[in-house]
Structures are given as C-alpha cells and as structure tokens.
Image 1 (cartoon, rainbow, N blue to C red):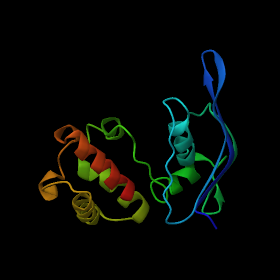
Image 2 (cartoon, rainbow, N blue to C red; image 1 turned 90 degrees about the vertical axis):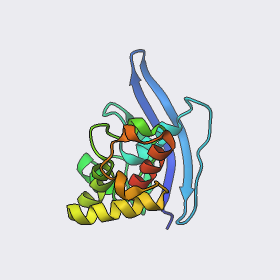
Image 3 (cartoon, rainbow, N blue to C red; image 1 turned 180 degrees about the horizontal axis):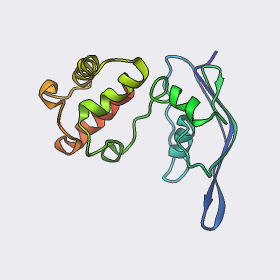
Length: 168
C-alpha cells in the first residue's frame, strides 16, 4: 500500500472576485522511502496542495478528490482527527522559517511541542530529544541554544530548526 495517494485533487478557494480553482485535478503516489518533489511556477498551487495534505486550508476552501495517507482518507476529516495525524504522522517544513516559528517561544518549546503532545514525553525528556534533533540538523552548540528565540538564529539555522520540528 502506498504511503500517500492523491487522486483527482481539486481545491477551490473563495476570493473577493468569487471562487478560484487553485488546484485542478492533480494525481500522485508516494511509496514508503520515496521522495517526491513538486515543482512549478509561482502561484501554480504547490503550497496549496501541500497545505491540503496537512488539513491547513482555510475553512472556506472546497476540496474534492481523494487524499489517502497510509490507507486513511484525509479529505473531509474533522480538525480533531487531523490533529492526531498532523505533527505526529505528517510534518511540513515551511519555505519561510521566520513565519513558521513563533517569535515569543523558545526553540526548545517549539521543537518539543509535538514530542510532548504526540509522544507523551515529559518536559525534561522532550528537552533531551530536542537537543538530539538540533545536533542532528547541525545547529552549532545546540545545548546552549535551547532557550534562544528564533530571531537569535540565522535564516539557514531557522530552516534547520524547521526541519527538526518536522522530524519531531
């Protein structure tokens, strides 16, 4: 069974000028262990497609077609069901790390949140895991930077922190 199957995905967004078809009938399959790149010009629907996989579209968006993750249909699932999957089984690395990270929370708190929510780790155990993840993605002197805030990192380091969050 494929890890991810997207069939005839259509996404309609509401705009001030009426409905706009943001995605028109995309299909793809991703097997376990494979990597898939979605490329295209600006505004062609790449981000909207990925946001639909995560259940992060605006409530006014109309999604039709099928998104099956590990055999489970995601289209039409309620927010509570998506929260059990999002951050636990599916992660996303946002293109712009400064907008993906909360400026008022430390890196340890942000990277540790999915570990506490989905794996039930204590604060102390989550902190240890965050340190291991930051080391894994190449944050220099990670132990002394756990309590730093996003603005205290370079753009490339913030991108690595986003990757650590997705791994968490």
